[in-house]
Length: 249
Image (tube, rainbow, N blue to C red; front, top):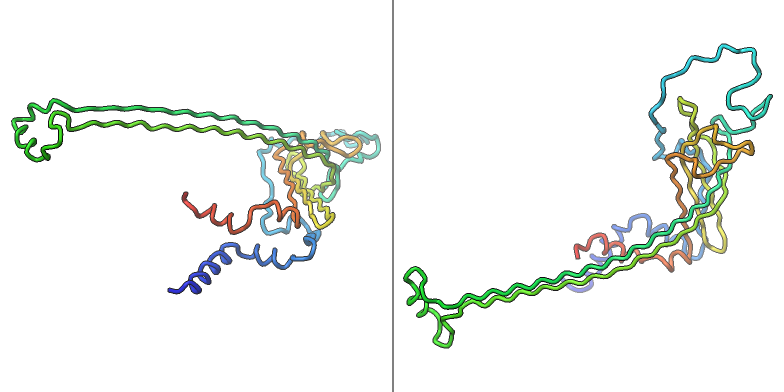
């Protein structure tokens, strides 16, 4: 097989491994990243309703004539988000710092010598005839094993994520907890920053200003990604990613 068919074969494999991602990246050459369309989050292909352990249902209040509702912060109307489609503001300040220092030193020395070959079940004379004359028959085995391994690694990671964004209620659980989801896209100078947020909140934790802190979001899923020319320049080439995935070494 010539060099040209080999090149075409490797190119075909690498292109097939990259899939639609390569075609999408090539289609955006010279253009800023496309922003996604606003859509119902419950209609996306990977959406699954949230199920959580629920307490036993409680009997409804018998005081039907009262205007006051449990959890209300205003006498006549509670302004906090409570129904599917309502919007609330999420405040997040996430500071993550981690540092890992590792140092491993392993040393092992083994030395074994077998000498004085005088008696080997009566076959010592025959064994001596097998080896050449220049070999010392009294010291046939001299084994020296000395492996050595030294490892030193340092990893430091600092990250700060500070933002405010609106999220909408997409589901109300049987116990009254609210499933929220929000997405924010900002495109600036050819870079597209996307923040996705999902989680479960208690209605009681929503403040009177209709805001909630991220520390009160259960099962929180917060993701921030960037795409664009700067991100492409700082990212690993897709060919190297494929090799890192399939290479056993």
